[in-house]
Image 1: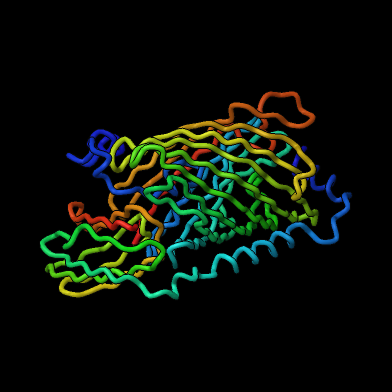
Image 2: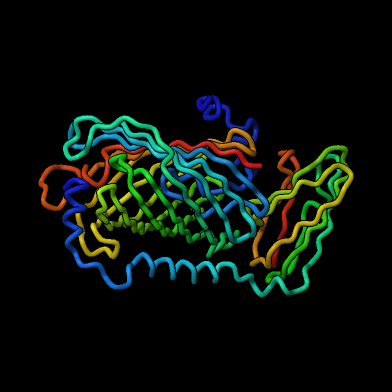
Length: 283
Length: 131
């Protein structure tokens, strides 16, 4: 099906970008989010899965899926909320219990505010986002916890060539607090940024690549640095119909370091690979 | 360091009197209040633009409006089937049933060119020029 879209495009209009409709940029950059907030009155249901694979040893596969409803109540604000499902398949990983489970993992909400809007005279658009999340299953190890995360992000993008080439940039700060089943409380944070480039090869297909730099701290105020990593990979966006689309991305860790561990890569706080697959229907 | 080791290590650390999470929440609340403040331009009188949708086309298809004033599109659908007035750059969409009229309110705009179209009909296009 994807090949059909790649080859077929949208008929006679495929070669003439000036005749293409403007594209909503939120999901064209993979894990990097664009500035788009949708259209006033628009509603959308999505299934958004992120899979994480690979630790230092053993086998590690975990996923978190957002079952999401989003709507745009004004021309500046978008609201999203939904439930989280998680899966963990872990065996022989040092420091982690073996586990094979599927669970309802928690819930989240997101508020996005378009701070700078793109016009035909200004190619830059910037959106500010906050996303509180509550989890009952730990994202990494899969055990029962009480976790509260508060993601804050800046999602920016630039239209470099009209209807053709886009650059996306994200800044991320994600503090969280976790209370384990044994009663311990752990505070940590992730911070970082990304850059992405996406090329619209036909009116309904966008291909690109992105790079992420992420840092991890054992404190919410970024004082106890434990390691960082660089992830790199391709992205794909396909609009099947005016109301239905998918986005996919794969990031591989290409560089990483852990404080106190000379081994290559940071596989303690990050994974070797992560993939994203999202399907959305607007109405 | 494993999760449990980490938790044990952190157990001994001194927690600040005002947790950072609370400060983050307070900051977020302030941001949200700021976000929901509507632009002052909404109080201004809107520029009304009348469009007719007939035989799968907008009439007129090229319209203009002054900058920094809200705009109100009044779309009369004369066709026998529904159309959806939509624009990515204006960030609006509205379904207008066959033989009826719909009103779409748009924020005050900066100078520029804004496209609109019928989401159900790829050939129906129009442009708003704001100056």
